[in-house]
Image (cartoon, rainbow, N blue to C red; front, side, top):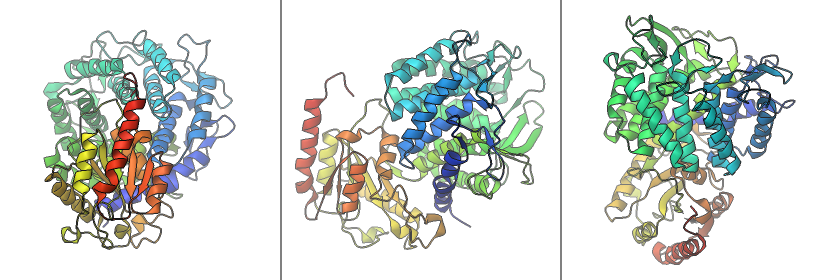
Length: 573
């Protein structure tokens, strides 16, 4: 049975080799410049279905996140899709401008003003701005906020479902995704007003939406966010897990304490909502506890995200959450992703694992990508005491490992294999004193070749980080690429992995994770592939040929910081 690291590697390959190419090819309608709503199980698009704006926004997030991550450069496709989204869905004849869906010929299919959809529109705009900081994205987001905080606002916080209203109930789902959108926009643009919005939404959740005596977040509420009056109410474990991730992220960005709310959400959802195999079941009755034990793919994705969030928030419990994430990732892979052709998914299965879905909805891709990226971010690197989030980008000093930090002894995998290069601790201290983040980016094909497990390499990085920290030389994060085209272990076989230098994936991944200013960063490596990777990421690369690292790095580090300080004005970030 594959271990957790191999499961992550296999899922990464499924995403980059199978799923993403399939959905930008057969899942994309060149006639409209938009994504299809669904494919059948042969990968053929269901062309006559209406296309929802929400699906286009989710797919724009997927393309943008994976472009920033270095998986695939989709800038041209993103620009075209966004242009067509505005053309087809932004309609001046509608009272609130944005159509819910269009038909197969491009006309309006449903013109309702839908809060869930508009939340995802803001979410997409946040990621588009992160890719290309064009002020027009923020201006449009503010126009959408005027609708969400105006005619769509609920009386006591959050949002109603839509205009016209389908009924007199409030549902937690649109408000949840509005919080997600506000957090994404704050991370992308650093605007205080978006964090203020997030704080207000969190307050409403904590005071009104969470039914504390039952330890649940009900799916339905009355118009004052009272759930007790709704007969046969239920909760969805997947949404509990989604809120856990959101609350932890909100806490990182705001400093607000969320432990008690997280504890409540997990206490019931883990007990009633996760089966023995690691699947999140579909729904549970609040008062009767009667379960609908079918499974939706998104619920298990959100459980993986919650495991990652808890492992990051409470490091002393990380091993336990990693074990739970292992079961969930194994369930996700076997229960939903094992299709032919690969790159599709079974969106819903019964308790025996038999498919209940009859097609493949594009809307689920967002959940898979988000879960796999979070799993990779938290469990696939070593990070030292994550700093508080700041919307101001900081430069980084990127260091290769073997030959720069330690003497290259060919695939070192144990502490006794490590001899640190002279001057490495002085280099790290200097860089940090000048405002750099320090990040290790290292090809580790020894994992793919079977010389060491990925867990061993992660443990070695923990040991190396601790030894450097004893000398007050703090490395912010350690990234590694375990993939190789000649891999002995199939999970790590990839012809040209985007992370393996000379590709820039690890550098771009660090920039996304840590809000790094690549244009004012530099890299030191001992191989030409290091320098090429740096160049591809827009970073200044420097070739180190041995001896004392501090003597080599000191003038480079000081030169870059001097040029930055003389070129940046107080209003620039």
